[in-house]
Image (tube, rainbow, N blue to C red; front, top):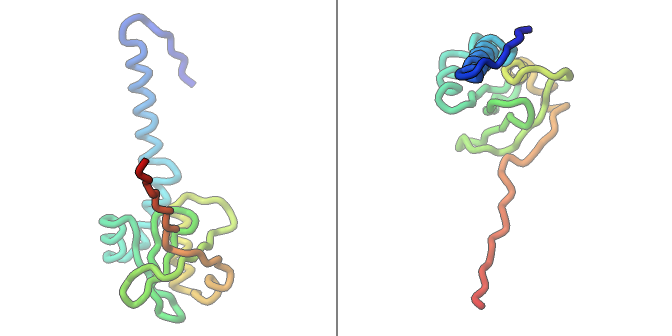
Length: 141
């Protein structure tokens, strides 16, 4: 590890610059970046364009032909779409071990495209709609 001694003017600036360089290196070469790169390699050109533009991509289930939208994330990020391409049901399924988000999304993509029935047998459903918040009623005093 590096040992820095604060030396008058500008000593803190060099340490901040080094930290920024380290963060940049990790962002570009860390496990999350490698996982995102691998995911992008496995996406079709249309899926890649969707992912770049909207932060999600869509896949077609292997058995039913249903459409699923996979959002960036590790949990509760798969939504089944209805005929109008609106979220219908949310599905939560993840690998047994903790992985980077890109690796989880790639596993979800491959699972839905190759063995949709087995995935849905173990997945937990959730409501894709956010619960409505109670309206605040103001009273005149």
